[in-house]
Length: 198
Ligand SMILES: Nc1nc2c(ncn2[C@@H]2O[C@H](COP(=O)(O)OP(=O)(O)OP(=O)(O)O)[C@@H](O)[C@H]2O)c(=O)[nH]1
Image (cartoon, rainbow, N blue to C red):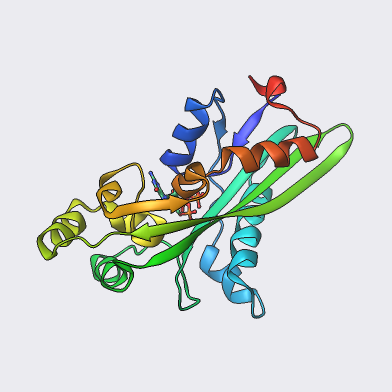
């Protein structure tokens, strides 16, 4: 069965490959900001689920299974944060989040398309992340690396950011970008087991 990852994320691709899946990668190009702006008073959980589903629906796949994801960091003040994209925003994020606990939300959408039609399953995973406190020099060096600018919440678990994550409570693959256990459950709900894909 064809397995399509509707994501440009190298981390999502790496998680799937290490887990025995070699997906086709089709980048959705969804305008995330515009879609979020169109939602009326959405919860953080709904935002990541709507975005994940939009990405999976946007790619042109006639038959097979498509997976789309979206990750955001939900901070204790109720705000959600995507990718900083600039050094200034990444620095502000770290000055606010260092030493705190936040929740990394990852929305997941699995869409199966075959002769029986289209079946869709959507859910999100929430992982608590306990941030450490980088020194000023460490923070500046981390920002200089460029890594925190292109990842949700301005940190990675499996990269340079790992030095500044004291611990997590929940699924680590979800933090990296795609929850394997949740994706397995969503695949089951559309009639697919891993043995169909391995
Ligand atoms: N390696 C790594 N990447 C992370 C981590 N946390 C978040 N990310 C990445 O941060 C990005 C979150 O942005 P998203 O909008 O969900 O995805 P994207 O990278 O824009 O790619 P699309 O799915 O095509 O939208 C994803 O690429 C995640 O894999 C982490 O702990 N490790």
